[in-house]
Length: 276
Image (tube, rainbow, N blue to C red; front, top):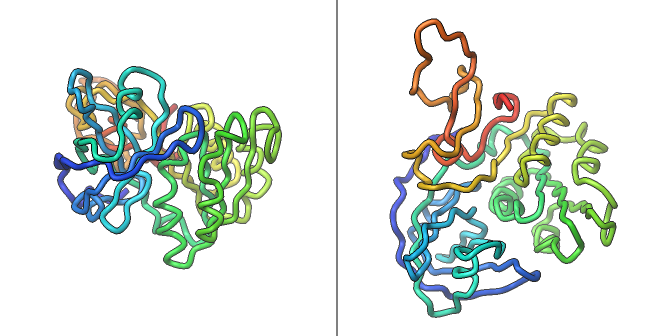
């Protein structure tokens, strides 16, 4: 993946808009021109709750255009509930951009985007980038219900082909989104995916059996977000360009993998280099 081009910084900003496209799912927009200029598709930021009584929350950067940045969150605990309660005019600090983002140039000109639930938040910027350079984009989007398929129409308006699946059969395929991918993976030159771990593992299996390379954006709860605590590690092939150069294997240790930090070396990894 490309090296980080901008050092992360604290961006003190103001919430400029808020919408709730589905129950419990909130999109917050903020004016942050410097963060917009620095952000690459697939990166994330740490959001500091205004009360500062709780630790920061890591969220993928959803939209980044005309000086406005947005994040999508699900209200699952006190930290996200505090953020979800923000209204236009409230202050909010964002620390970012963080992580490596997608290497979209390496995915070719016919790309499958695979989203599970709010993993969609990490795939809008990749879709915009790919479509802007003339690539064909097909979004495969899975969620529990039709209501939770947030902004699927937005991708269609941008020019992406969209196929959806729901766990309850309320829209699209009654089943897993990877079933949709498997049926058409042969026509794609690359895959970019974000969603729950089980879905990403299934995408990795599809990529391996089909011979199509895939980049996976891993979801994790980060403590620090900058790689200092080593609390969000994943086994990665030792020869990967993303493998950390430390810690090294001890004397006599023959492991062919190292533990990479999802927040620092990731969150995006090549599927074939992960040693799950």
